[in-house]
Image (cartoon, rainbow, N blue to C red; front, side, top):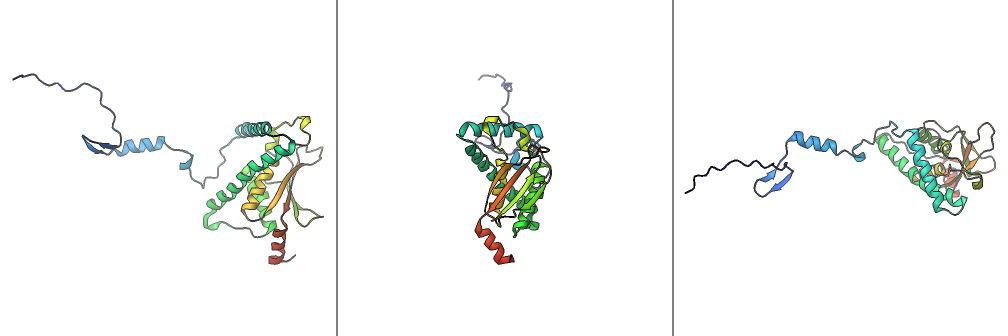
Length: 227
């Protein structure tokens, strides 16, 4: 009978992985190893919704928005088409923004029930969160019961785009108009919102966001609160 001594294997062992090994049974990794794996696998979904610190710098925002405008331009056939596509993109941001604010505020979330209240919310909180400052002015149109106006003397995103002369009166603020429209629709104040450049030598980028509420919204306001 052979008396050979069996030497221990010098082959490299395979690192343990969680799961079931037929020869060893269930494998439970050490807590320290599990924590290391979890910490390396963090994603944006692990971040708290309550975080309010802005994390996108101006350079990144300008690069991203310029790319959006360039892409939309390549897919459009007219200035109106460009603005409509930018509006649609902003609309999605607006609806999600209101949802995020509601989640952050939790039980303290306030639901605006009047037109002026929801517009002041947009002028102050929405603008300050997205652009770092409130909008400059909120006005009601003197010749129409349905129309209100929000003014921004120096729109943040308009500073990133140089509009060629052949594009005439293209206003990339249509993206922001879409955000306003999305917030209003999500809050049940249906309206159409457009962005228009204001002729002002001192503020060449000055933009007015014209908000045209549906007649049903005005009628609801009059019934509930009177004229």
